[in-house]
Length: 316
Ligand code: ATP
Ligand code: MG
Image (cartoon, rainbow, N blue to C red; front, top):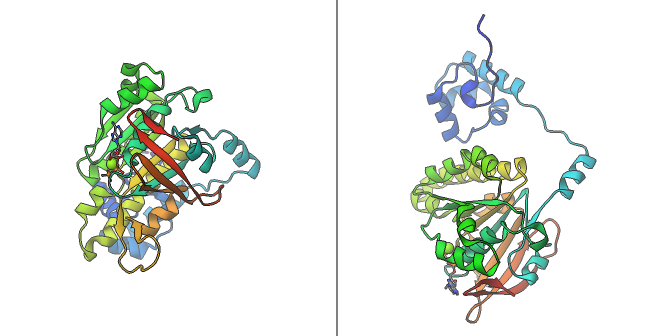
């Protein structure tokens, strides 16, 4: 008798081959959990497999998924293990509770030149510092979707932080993603890299720009949101599985319907707002000053502070 393979991926389900699995993912059903909660008739409609096969696939997916139950005490212990990476600004660190945290997604949104990328560079350097200096003595995965990663800036900031500059560059793995598929793959295939290189921070700069240009118009909106949703969910899984920090940047769009206040909202809307643990809104002030607004955080009250983008990096 053939030995049954452990069911870990969609393709491991009986009757589900690579083509069918791809159709499922395309419809946003990208995990065993999601298959487990489908009606077989729906699955059959999406993929074209017959209902009997669909029934078996759903049953196998149910079998393979286990609910993740932890006691509140275990959760507390896990929380005690949470690390934080300093932003370079004491005021900003304080605003967000001591730096950007692991096992969480921190989203920064703002207009062009507001400093989202510069803050990312600073975090990529600071993550490498020892804990006592505001780091996690860890390495970094930088997913660059806009071609704006600048090693020279890393060198300058690393020097200022007292790190060996060659080593600091070595410790940052950069993926230049040219399409949303490449961006998603970078996160999907990150497990080995994370383990081998002790990655404690993943940066996605920017989270939304490729999706925004690839999925234009109303008809594509649904697909865009599904893919973005799946991508950010994957990032959240990595953050939790490896207790690492995720920093994502996002542009803003003008919201002409809004008459009072600041008429800008982050791209991707609610999906991202729900997925990000902490949301920061960056905006330009005079010269090198930037105002950071804490928009959403599970621990802290909303508030604002001012940071500076200097030639040496982010400062108070
Ligand atoms: P975009 O949406 O276009 O990606 P962003 O929010 O990522 O914008 P950044 O690239 O982080 O913006 O910020 C650019 C700004 O950072 C510059 O306008 C400048 O004020 C500042 N900056 C960049 N490099 C330096 C430097 N070497 N020294 C001082 N300030 C710098
Ligand atoms: Mg940028």
